[in-house]
Each structure stands twice: as C-alpha cells, then as structure tokens.
Image 1: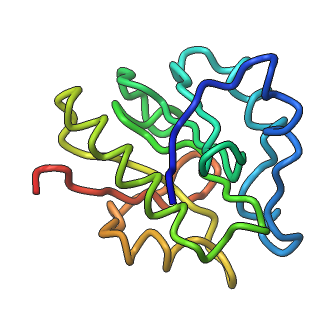
Image 2: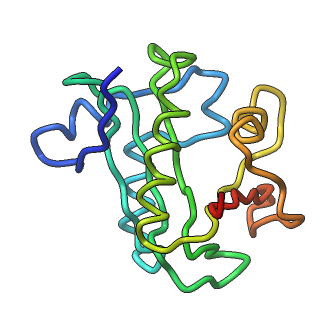
Length: 155
C-alpha cells in the first residue's frame, strides 16, 4: 500500500467525485460532490481537502477544517476532521487508518494538540472505527446533533 494525499484538481475531479460509500453508509457521510459544495458554502471552516490515492488509484477523500478559530457549536476546531470517505470497493483494507496516521503527522507538524471529528450516531456508523483509532467522546454534540470526538495528539 502506497497511500498519498493529493490535491483535488481538474485532472482528477471526475474520478474523485465518483467515489462512493456503501448505500447503508450514505446516512453517515456525504458524497464527495456534496462535501466540495459544503466546502465552498462554508469558507469560514477553512476547508483543506485531498483525494486519497493508493499508487495511481483514487480510493478516498478527506476534508478538514484547517486551523480555524472555533465557534461552537457550528464551527469546531482548530483542527476538525470534517469528512472521511473510503470508496466501498476499498474499505476494510486499512486506508482509513493510514489516512488518519498521515493526518496526525501533518497536524503535529503544525503544532496541533488535538484532532476533533463528529459522527451521526446509529447502527453501522463510524463510531467503532474512530474508537479503535483512539478518539473519545468529548461530551457534547454539534448543532446537527452529531457526537463530537477528540483525539489527543500529544502521544
């Protein structure tokens, strides 16, 4: 596995937008097209997004709020994992875990001490994935009722 995080450009946009979760996961994560539209609609979130590649094959998409001034409950941060989507064909192969490993390295280089994310509660959701990676509930929810999770980046 040779995972890289690459900018979304005109050259790869169509391939990246075609990435999809399973139908059952659609209630938990928006499509890449919806995520890009959300990024455009909310520049205050300082969206930073990348296509996830294994060699030359796009396998996923990730988007963060990058070093923002928190304005809870609508804008959490300063470092917030806004979207993580691994295409259904590539799930269960360690891509999500590798993306998070790389992000943690990047964020530590920026001086970040924690990474936040949130999830919609429900059967088949991403709670277990995040828990296995060390995220813990922060004890609150965002304005959409999503549970906010925190990953300590000190260790």
